[in-house]
Image 1 (cartoon, protein in one colour):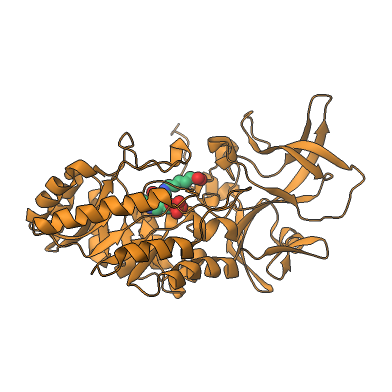
Image 2: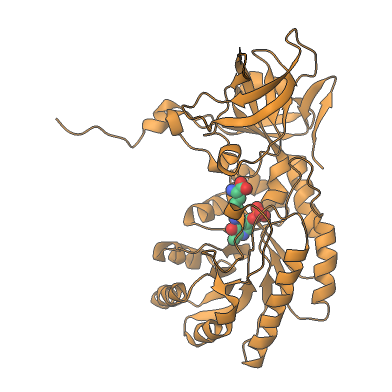
Amino acid sequence: MDFFNYKNQLLQAEDVALTDIAQEYGTPCYVYSRATLERHYSAYADAFASHPTLICYAVKACSNIAILNVLARLGSGFDIVSVGELERVLKAGGDPAKVMFSGLGKQAAEMRRALEVGIHCFNVESEAELYRLDQVAGEMGKVAPVSLRVNPDVDAKTHPYISTGLKENKFGIDIKDAVRIYQIAHTLPNLNVMGVDCHIGSQLTELKPFLDTFDRLIGLVDQLADVGIEIKHLDLGGGLGVRYRDEVPPEPAEYAQLVLEKVKGRNVTLAFEPGRSIAANAGVLLTQVEFLKCTPHKNFAVIDGAMNDLIRPSLYSAWMDIVPVSLAPTSEGQRSYDLVGPICETGDFLGKDRELDIQAGDLLAVRSAGAYGFTMSSNYNSRNRAAEVMVDGDKTHLIRARETIEHQLAGEQVLPD
Ligand code: LLP
């Protein structure tokens, strides 16, 4: 459920017409709804309210500091994968004590900064990383809180590029090896074993893989107890899917009910790292039709948004809903269009074969673009990255100015004469 709805035939974000946003801030432009973000975060917080649970929003999904700040105000924790994301969380007023540091290639300087600000836990992905963390913490006279990211070998049944919990994936530590490596962690002087972590993939539309994972992890918790290692938290990662087209993903409440049933009577805190299910449907990419190009073979709508702004359709063949901002009929009538950007790649499209009644100059909204939209954008073809706007009721706030050529060129230099 989100707050992008039509009123008087015009698509609105909360109480603001997207036509007004395009006029004020230009296109392409990401538009987020604060009320939607808050609703999605609260769906998790409320669902797990009866059990000690830390909801750590996965910053990579959408990392603008205004987004992080809205969530921090609700008490959210954060899942980060780089020192850049950590600095964003700090700048946004996030509590470092609620930060999980995931990712399989943490550098020593990143570990140092995280230890300096006192994060909640490092999710360690290899034996080698354990030794590095132990050394860095030792040099600082600190003890690093750690979980091991375990690879439970569960099929998340999602796109192969975003499936992470199979044994052939690069992520985590094979669950069969986990006890041995936990024992190493336990003996290292500058580490404090806190939890068990996993993340099996993204855009999951069924609960079974999560529940199978839970069972495997809780089995590991028991095995660790047998060798004298006490686990305080279980981090089940992110991954809950959203509706892009006709998927019917489970709600956080259904997920919570089943997990809470399983965890009953156990003295273990829960943690989750949702990204997409909080941010995706809280944002749209607003784009304008530049030209219609109709040929005997195909009709193209050339739009000002492109694969550099939103790469999901090109990279994953992801289907994203694309709707006209105005429902008023045009003189062109309904046709089937490929919606293509100006980038010099055949793969530069946001949608194909879409039935639309549009004309040049019309605005389109790409729905569900709040997650893995702006954060995956680039400057390919030297295009400036889009502006980002947050709507809050009847107010709009520019939360990231459109990039300029000066921004792009800052830092570049020609060779001396
Ligand atoms: N935790 C870890 C360790 C992760 O790697 C991820 C996502 C998450 C949490 C958040 O997962 P979510 O709740 O958003 O599913 N760019 C792709 C998605 C890549 C996901 C990477 N990891 C896409 O656009 O579909």
